[in-house]
Image 1 (tube, rainbow, N blue to C red):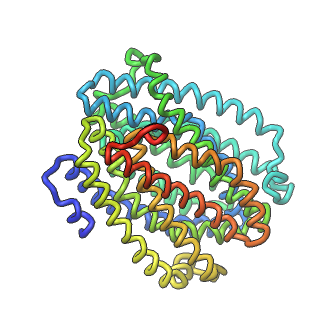
Image 2 (spheres, rainbow, N blue to C red):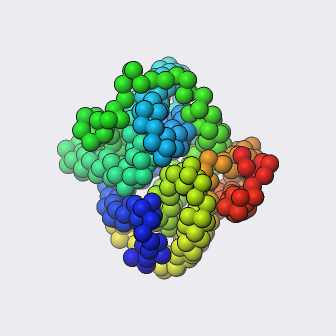
Length: 447
């Protein structure tokens, strides 16, 4: 409640953000409970080694998220600005055109992925037993089919974000995870452990849930915005993919910086090491998740304010968000103290997660949260060039650095590299945002 008091105001935009923050916290309680149950339920259905294989393979497939070419981010800002200016027709055209482009992109990627899958040796790629090849090919097929469906229909959740309804968007994701958990528990009772069944539960069930919810709300509450062929305006492609293109470069760079972490760990340290790293990461990500709940509603709020040139509101809001960030230090201390007990209770069995791993992972999340504050504000404004340059530099050096560091320091090598990226992003973001809020952004700082 102290967080909400920091934004005590009669401003409609801030009040809407307050409402979303409260609802996001409620949703995140449910989401956290589901997440805490999902990992032990999954490991209970398959063993920790198979779970590590699943994490590594799904991490590799998740690179597909970067091949929307930044379109969803370009759409989000374009839709928010169109609505802020009262141009509903343009907003509807942004929706229909974005759906059309995404459908084309991921249909092509899906077909190519299924063709390539026939010649890949997943056992060699992941460094696991060759007898698993047939199963891993099937798992990959399930992954790419449902992931492609998700990528198209996720535009509805982005629409909700652009419409300053992030809580509603988060609830849809939570619903998908809840049904996945229910299915996994059902599989535990009625089937033997299977990576194929696990893949359907963890990726297929959320995708089906998303499709059904999207269709329902486009028939009811959001009928006005339902995509139609007549509203497709290919001329908007340049606008959507213009800003989106910069986001795409950022996303593609992030692929090299972050998405190969689990792959490197499994190659250097083995599948069970991925499980240990993932558990520590997910536990301390509570810090990042909590701050994201507070910061997330302000992406589109900053888009709206910047479109209306309301710099005073932006300055005041940034200062309050910056003060709230210091709450991460207290969270870190509490989580670190409780970590041995939570690990034991969470997993219901002993697993070697040492104190040092918890310590550095928590610090990593504090730095990430600060970087995220700047990124969300700048993303809403649409000034992402400097952010793009930081990630581009690390895209070329992150993988070799992580591989070498992991060889010498294990998990800590991965965490050291990602922390360095976050720190650089935070420093550059701080400088740029302060210049923009003072209306003194010139040259590359204004891009």
